[in-house]
Length: 292
Image (cartoon, rainbow, N blue to C red):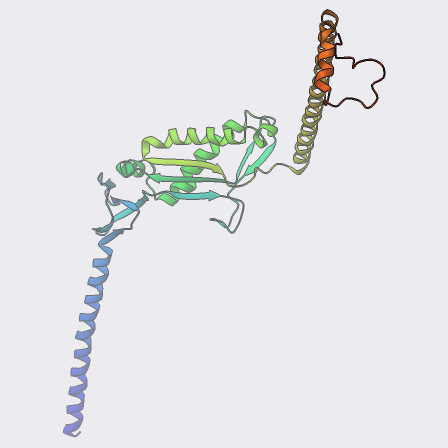
């Protein structure tokens, strides 16, 4: 073989060796970047972080503010919101979940009802580590599990003491307020502050029951209107009676005054006289003028 063949083979070997070294360098650099990224965690604005060592199960007591933190392999930073967030459990597939998350409960007679419920909440930054130690999971899982269960139990417990007309009517606000107070008391020691619990829509009542409720409400409104009309008529009649009685008493008083003092008649005539003498007065004087 010619010497040029050996020279080209040597060049190819050198190139292969060079590319291998370059690949090792690039691969090592990429690995270092990935390891470095995996060794840090970030706490986003509006949240506090809890650093947890998943290998030994250690939970750091101090909360982490916004920023980047060392989180080597085996360490995870959980974030909890310290600003107000809202979650709605509804039957709508276009809300926060594609499945029906509305609450089901019963009245005291066992009638099944449904309702959409929403909650606003935040985490006390001073108690965030306590909340994690209690539930050992992130905020989304706490909402889907412990918080939802507590709200459902509170609503079920109070609704079981009420009739459907009360739940749909004058106790609707009281029911959700009672549930809110119960849930607040339960979660406050763990740092989860339930700010407000409210109905996110109408309470769903079976159609036939709803018709009966509406018919009863209509009848009650009609009865109240009839009572108002009767009261108005009675008031008007009493006013007329009072006026007539007053007029009669006034006439009696005036008649008595005339009997005791006939000069009143002349005084009244003078009060009504326009000052003009009649054209034909006859033979005598005017009745209210004394002629001596």
